[in-house]
Image 1 (cartoon, each protein chain N blue to C red):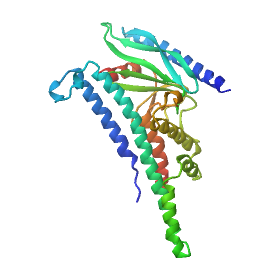
Image 2: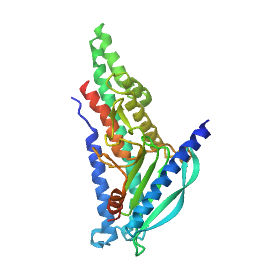
Image 3: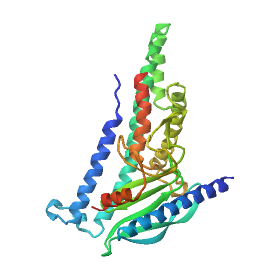
Image 4: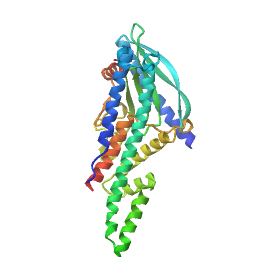
Length: 146
Length: 174
């Protein structure tokens, strides 16, 4: 039973990660940035050990700007987390469903979440959630690499 | 009068995150005049070491937020229990209150969350989320056993702050 739940959780996370990574690759390609795909291993109590794709973003001159790393499927308030990580910072993206975390039955923590998907969540006291798109990805890469 | 103690912790997190970034830039540009006698900023992996330190620091801020929340809630319960001092016979009132005040310090955090759930203005969703943060806090506090890797936050300190702050704000109104 737990094994089945772990497998479903992992598979859901892998599917959503691959969808986002497909988008990321085409957005970055449009900006003449290079993307290298690697594999990293994740270990979570529910899912066990498993391999996930990871992206390394570089300039045309091969300067590394950021890594886009899946962190896990078992996230307190989300169905998965991916980090955009560079030498000067880290930004977090979560896959939220059903409006994301609730403060009460009719009050969302992040009012901006109106459909299931990947959202960047600002790590601040009043930070909101923004749906992932090309402009946001480029902004996050800039933020962690400069 | 109680006041919200969590703001100061999150502000400290914001400042420390900014400091890490400034230090990383100084290292990247090798501003050796800023390093004084420290040798490690000149090492080739110094920036990566700060990246790792920042992750550790985030976990410690979750711990600090929970500890501060825990202290606030215990103080809140001790304040509510002060009414015990009014019971009769009066010579029992003070010893009972003193015993309550001592023992509440040792109540389990899970039991305290169960108690807070009885307050109608605190939603059970909120307590459920606080409970998952507590599990994460315990995992960090007990040495982050890799074989028992638990769930993590999307935004660890900020999310922890927002959930616990919501509970604190409700308690301050009651």
